Amino acid sequence: MLGRSGLSRTGSFRPENLGQNSLHMIGHLCFTLFVIGVLVFTIIAATYEPKNPIFHPSTKIETFLTSSSNATFRSDNTVVRTGEDFMVSNQTAFATFINAKDVVETKEGSTDEISLSRCEGDWKEPIDCKDPEVFHLMMKVVIERFEDIHFYQFGKPAPGPKENTCDMAWRFRPKEGKTVAFFKDYRRFVIKRSKKCKLSVVSIGDYHSGVNARKKKRKNQKPGFEQGGVPLPVVGEPINDSLPVVESEIAFSRGKYLIYAGGGDRCKNMNHYLWSFLCALGEAQYLNRTLVMDLTLCLSSIYTLSNEDEEGKDFRFYFDFEHLKETASVLDQQQFWEDWNKWQRQDGLTLYLVEDSRVTPMQLSEVKDSLIMRKFGSVEPDNYWYRVCEGETESVIRRPWHLVWKSRRLMDIVSAIASRLNWDYDSVHIVRGDKARNSDLWPNLAQDTSPNTLISTLQGKIEDGRNVYVATNEPNMSFFNPLKDKYSTHFLEDYKDLWDENSEWYSQTKELNYGIPVDFDGYMRASVDTEVFFRGKKQIETFNDLTDDCKEGVNTCNTATS
Image 1 (cartoon, rainbow, N blue to C red):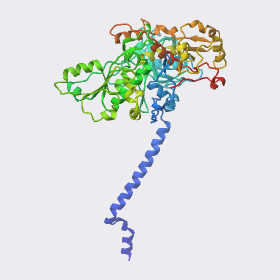
Image 2 (image 1 turned 180 degrees about the vertical axis):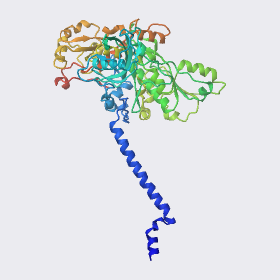
Image 3 (image 1 turned 90 degrees about the vertical axis):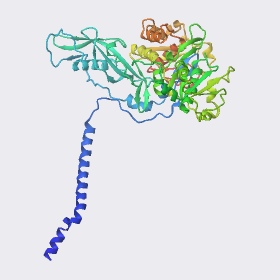
Image 4 (image 1 turned 90 degrees about the horizontal axis):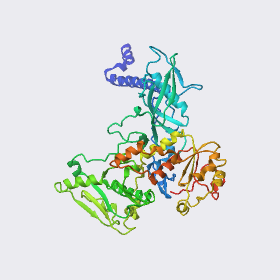
């Protein structure tokens, strides 16, 4: 009995039970380690503060083409919307950015001065821009000085041309105003060291003055800034909008291409141009083909200084070609035909000609030929490119508006103007003239508003003494003189040094134009004017006593249609 009882007490150690016991022990051990790991991770997560304040929510923008956002381009009363406009209507997708924590926090009562923790050698020695304490001082001063912008990233300072100067760059966004783009600035700091080894910032240079802090773009670096899978433009970064080149004969011969030829779209307003161009780009994407595009535009007389249609304008003057070539498959038409003529015969490349816009993209989906050419006739309006996307095609082909960004060279001018106003201004938009009066896009706009009416309209909406940017097509600036008694008024023409012969814009566009200077034309002016308007803290868009919104005295009275 005792032997039997002993065996029963140790039965769990029988050979046939050892495997089960081992599994139970291992399971308990793993569970214990898991619980410990969760506790450690929780503690780290609760106390960790990331260095980079930019977080990437997974919010997706799915309403590009149903956006009701304000149009960005207005010239001759046409409305042209580009990719950024659709993102404006989805501001909630970028709420994380708006509320992001500044990279550097400063304490109340801090000054533009800091004491060095160590002071070795002569106090007159050159400033070491790489010194962390110098870096911290520069960041602290910038954040305190520019209260109306959010900072997201600072670059390490670079030595300036003098021993007491340092250049530093940063990325930022204005706290208020309708924009989802990022901006980059780099400025020159003059720094002083006292006999008691205290560092202080004597002055900060103008917008983009710190050229030594401007880094060259890395090879294969994508344009823009990713947010939840959606790229955002970064204004102020180096631009690489060189034409794409096919790497080899093999690559060219394996490709599939689409080209639109002829038609009546030439020299129409920019609204018309984009509506047709994006139809072609949408079809190319649907067919999984490279769009062969003509980068030379004909600028309509409504935008030119000569009041005549002008050929030979470069797509890159007005739109961000770098973003387009990085996000869509496109080739320059001239380069394409050179390659086609070299390799078409020997590689047996074939062409499929379509001369009727009623032939739908769906009917072309099975075409195997290397090149599909849509050839348009001479009878308007049946020869407009956008006819391809009408009818049953309209529900299939979606125009990829998000691929078209405004020229970052023009946006750099916008940023420079806003920076000179310290991003702290209100804005009004005034359209005048017969063309505006007859426009169905602005049906309720009081174009011939008198100065006294303007003042009474702004009364109570904009505080006296505020900086007010006036976006207008009115050439006679004396019309707005009565406003100067109440506000500090600013106009686009006040900043013409940003596009004159000494400007960066002038030299860059001249280089794109084979050494020939480029006019800062009406379309560019309207683009910049409207973008500066949208960056105002308060935006008064119309002056119409007949609209209910304006009667109620709201800040913005919108009558624009999209």
